[in-house]
Amino acid sequence: MDVIFLLQKVHLKEFTKPKLLIFVIEFKNLKYLIMKWEDSKKGFESFLRLEKGLSANSIAAYINDINKLMVFADEELKKLAPEKVKLAHLKKFVEWINDKGVSPRTQARTISGIKSFFKYLLMEGKITNDPTTLLESPKIGRKLPDVLTIEEIDLMIDTVELNKPEGQRNKAMLETLYSCGLRVSELVNLKISNLSFDQGYIKVEGKSNKERLVPVSEKAVEEINKYMDVYRKTLKISKDSEDILFLNRRGKKLSRVMIFTIIKNLAIKAGFEKKIGPHTFRHSFATHLINGGADLRAVQEMLGHESILTTEIYTHLDRDYLKTTLNQFHPRS
Image 1 (cartoon, rainbow, N blue to C red):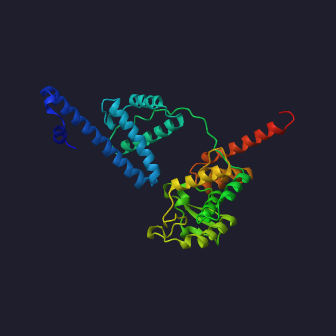
Image 2: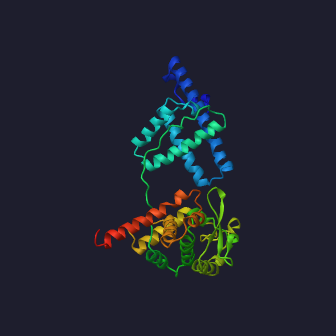
Image 3: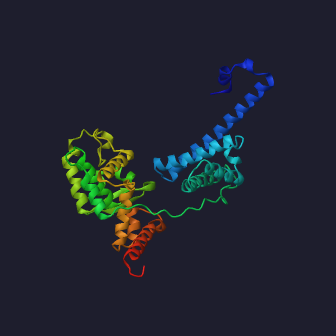
């Protein structure tokens, strides 16, 4: 939309010449600001996709963080362009999102995204100093993930209705999530060509398109083969989904949302009150391995964690379990 088009929509009689001039100047400033932010976001998005190799979901999260800062710059900073943003402005931004009720954990993630954005601008020569260098994130405690016991895993899987057409598919998906500790995005993108059942492995395409080999249990292999024979071969498969393992009724790749819905409904049917999602199976996979004495580095490799510090959260879970057991059963507790 240009200035002339906008003015055609405005009742010019309502403006004196000075007011009209101010209106046109303000509109031009707003248009310039939007262009500066959009150009920077577009370049940042390309950087995340092409150089960092991030997934579409991760990129969308980063851009959403920048959109929040863009709104703040427009509403609170008199339409400040990205290269004009200073540390003082960013501190006010943190206060702004805090006042809107954003949780400390989400604040920390948003600040992380904004730091990446300004590092990109510095790398591209659009700014000479990074204003986020001294920007601190709110202090947050380490949140331990919810996990299921082995008995609860079995109950969830037994809840699947095998008399329904998609029942065997759902059972195979749950066995795969628990057997391999996959992320939901890794499950929906799992390819038939990456299954090496004869060797006992599957190849997983994880974050940033990094591939890893993960052992697969005999039980998961059994349920996947049943699904392939009973359900998948009956579908009219879309050409772009021919190599995708788990499909919907229309022969297309399942969405992440659909996986969440399936698991949520099964959890309700099983009578669980706690919140359960695909990641709960991943957490349970790792926790059960650590509790069973598995090497932390091996668990890190199977989960696809870049840092072992991320994997160490499951050792905290193990210690908490031991502490609870001690307090419950030891005579001196």
